Length: 224
Image 1 (cartoon, rainbow, N blue to C red):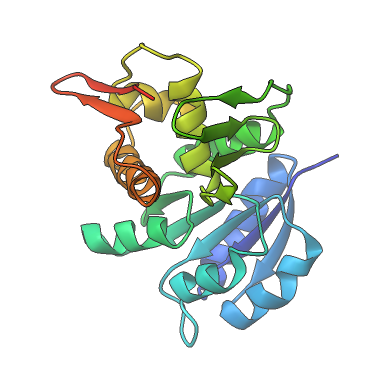
Image 2: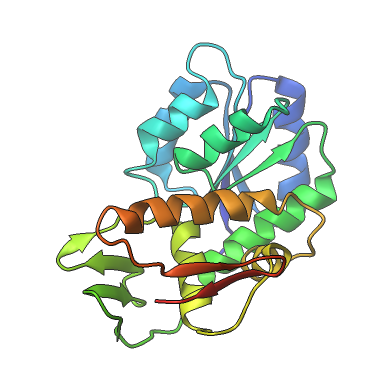
């Protein structure tokens, strides 16, 4: 069964281009020209959302904020904004990735395919318990401290899963980026830094223990 992509952009030419491109790749597509249409069409359960940030009325950031609690599929921002804070804001409200306009269709296709592969990964893993009441439940993809669910996003959990399943191994930002997204490190690896910062903030609400350690000049490793 073909994956379904919801394409949200206020520019007709971009919507038409992406629709034709992805349908030629074998995907199903849904179109939305503004935030209101996105809210209407998420009920059709897309497998991935391409979401333009700079839409009139309700912009992509607000759309993501409204739907993220109810929509678990990957959300990739399309943005002409190049300021770092804009990209950080997108990640903080639950976006999984971003690509800056003008973009290469091949690069966009690679990112879409990589996120969909991550979603399709299967294989149940046993419940793995760590000290200080921290529990990583791999099958449900949740992290708990005591009975409290830390509410990690999909990408945050993927990072915790990668590091905790390879305890003691040091991963560079580039390596984490490659492992998670499934393509080489030509993208912005600083997205990894921001996700790890957010994971640490969530852990710190419950414990001062360091679970993800920085190995200076090298990368990160699980220390829990």
